[in-house]
Structure formats: C-alpha cells, structure tokens
Length: 551
Image 1 (cartoon, rainbow, N blue to C red):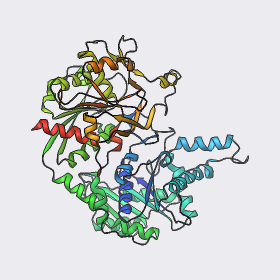
Image 2 (image 1 turned 30 degrees about the horizontal axis):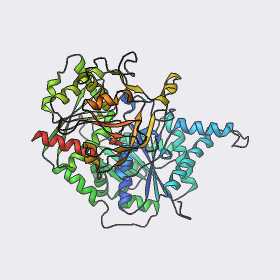
Image 3 (image 1 turned 90 degrees about the vertical axis):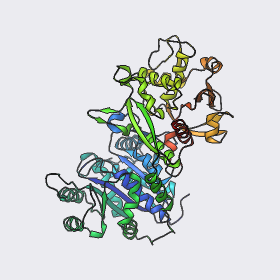
Image 4 (image 1 turned 135 degrees about the vertical axis):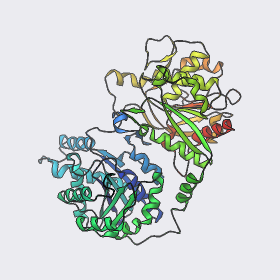
C-alpha cells in the first residue's frame, strides 16, 4: 500500500557513446547500494522498440527473453534487477515504445482524452510518467530506478528522455540523471579519450537534461586527470564522476561503485538523509569473495543452438542459466568451467558424442524449432547411457522424454509435433489451448507464461532437492508431454516426479538414483528464480551430482 505523503525519488539511467555499455548492471548496482542503506527500491526498464514485449524478438539479436512471475516477457535486464535486488517484479516494471503507444491509442479510441488532440508530445511522455509513478506506488518505493534503453542521440529514445525532463521539472529535487558513458583507450594512442563522453553529454543537454552523475566505463580505472577533464567539459563536479573499469564479474560492480562513494553522491543529490546500516553489503561481499576464492573446477557442457552469431559465441541467449549455474557452484565451493557446444555440430559430424566424457555434467537449456534437435537427442542418449549427470530445461526436458521413448521403449519415430506432426508417436504435443492461437498466427504473449504450481512426489530427486511437496516455478512453452504415453514411459522406468495439481501436465521427469546419478528434466525455467544469495535447489542438486561423479 502507498504511504500517505511519502516522498518518492527517481533515478534515470541513460547510456552514452555505445550500446551495451552496462546500463542494466549499473542500474542494478545502484539499487543494491541504496538497498544496503535501508531504502526500499524498485526498478523499471524502458525498451525503445515498437514490439509490445520481448517475446517475439529473436534471441540472437536481442539476447535472452526473461519471463516475470505474472507471465510478461521482458528484456534480460529485468533478470539482473531481480537477481541483484532479490525482488519479484511485474509487467508494470517494464515498458516498450509499442506498449506505450498502444495504451495512448486505446485511450484515444475510448474518448478518455475528452475529444482533444492527442499528440506525441506531451501525451506519450505523460503516459510514460504515469507508468513510472504507478510502478513506484505499487512497490511503495523510496527510490525508483528507471533505465532508458538505447544510446543518447538515437531517435528511438527521445520520448523517454522527454519524460525524464518533464518529471524532473514537475518534481525538482526528486529526480537524478545518471549517464553511463564509454571512455575508450585506443591501443595505438595509449591513453583514455574523453571526447566521446563530452559529445554524449552535450547531446543529453540538447534533450533538456544535465547529467548529475557520470559513470565512466573503461578498460582501466579512470585517473584524476580524466575525471577533471570530464568535469570541466560536461559541467559536473569531479566527485560525481564514478570510475567503472572492467571487472571479472558483474557482481563486483556495487562494491566498486561504493569505493567511489556513489551511494553518498546519490543520496546527497536526492536530499535523502544518509541511512547507513551496519553494512548492508556484507552478505554480498561474502558472496563475491567466495566466488573468487573457490578453486575446485567443475566442467559443464551447455549444449544449445543459439551460440553462433557471425564469428562470436553468443552466450547471452542463456544468461539466466549461466548465472544460475554460477550461484549454485559458488554455494557448493566449486568453480564452474562452462563450455558452449552447438547442437548442430553433433548432427553434421563436427563433434562426436564421446567428447562428452571429459565433462562432469551436461545441460540442455530451453529453445524452439527443428534446428539442432537430432544433435541434442544424441547428446542426451550418450549422457543417459554413460551415467553423465544431465539437466534438461523446458525443451531439454521434452527431448529427454523423446530420447527415452525412442531408445528404451523402442518407438523409433517418437517425436514432438513441433518438429514432425506426421509422426505416429507424438510424445510431445502442442497444448490444447495453444492450437487455435498457432493456427491463427497469434504468437505474441500467448504461450503458457508465468508462475504455476506443481506437486512433487516423495522419494524422488526433485523432492530431495526442494524439500517441499508443492513448488511454484515460471513457465514459457506451447508444448507438453502427451499424456497418452505416460503409463508406458513410467512402466519402463521414467519417473514423472513433478505434476500440475490437476494432474494434466508433467512438470518434472527423472530417472531414479539407482539407475542414473542425475538424469532430470523440467518443463519450467528454474533459472529465472536463481539469485546470488539464494541459489536454485535444482541447479545445486545437479552440480552436487556432477561433483560426486568427478570424484
């Protein structure tokens, strides 16, 4: 509930010079620092896309789609917010250009503007402000951090900068602007160059905004000479320029920011009395220290289809999975060594399954479509037959069931209708409520999305990991295990250890410990609930099994 007369504060985080400069991590880190001072924080991401949500965006172009508890498909930065701040955010914390325009047009059609002219300015920025204020009220936040996607100077984010300007005018003293800017150091010159940041600052000025804080992203720490130069040309105090050099882990960032006293700077700008706790970052610092002191390596192969993007390995597609593995590994005192294998390479002969012998465990994350499926099935078969711990997520669980049907039940044409709808043995079929949506090309936001409960059977790997009879996990899928094959699969040894309360959906499949050290798949996405200080129990159980096999 909103507290009467509570003075809300707002921090807008914008990016300068290049994209991918680290605004999401900076926003999350600022929030973590303010939480450590005893303040209630919430975070908002604004994406300057016409897409209504991130669900229909190609992961190789945009990175991972992060699903919130209420089912909204968002940008991966929302995952960073939830992990850093240990919060469960909702759709009000995420907006795109598309959803803002959609709402303004809906209001206009319903005569909610009373017949007046509806214009891009001021009506679009006002809708942005309405959403920001609503998210603040829902969270009853002391401080709301708003990350504006894109780079200063792009046409796409002008309306959001205008919203920041209007809110700052409306609420003087309650709004701070933080610019995260890149300071390059060309190798042939050998020194950091501040000119790009100066131009970014002036471009921000042209939108009616002045940066109160500049976070200088660079390969090395910023020296005082560079800070003074940026201060003179960007009209800012040198104390308000924060050095943000490259670090080995994004979880170092809040600690680095505090070395430059970013918390004090922000509190002073917003007129908040310094709410120092004993040390709200102690647990966080312990987590970071443990991640660096751990020496015992665990080798995990992640087999997916989205790893190739030109000449680069694109691991951002599976960002939450990678982070979840790290959290559980550090918790167990292990150092995760992750290798990304393209499932297509197992199909065309570039890779043979026996290379999996050198890994302590294999994980297949979620995905869609036909590409790389036969390669994944070969990997699953090898892991099952050679007692290599295996963890399958969403599609990784569906393919695990198909592999079992093919090679244990002898149903050689077993398949998913997503790949071959003409197969006689459709082990994985489209959900009934999805059929009409797909047939009418209704793809956006129509999957089984968000948090759903499941009941866990006693005496199973899943029950041992969770220690609970009932769980709630986040989903994102259109297909499910065909219930017509459940009895035959179970008769032949596969255990469905997690089932929806109505007993219609198979949520977890596994083999007993007596048959395999760890062979388990889940229909949901446990990675979305893994947090640095609260690792997910299934990832922890998987890595624990990997560690035992390593011994």
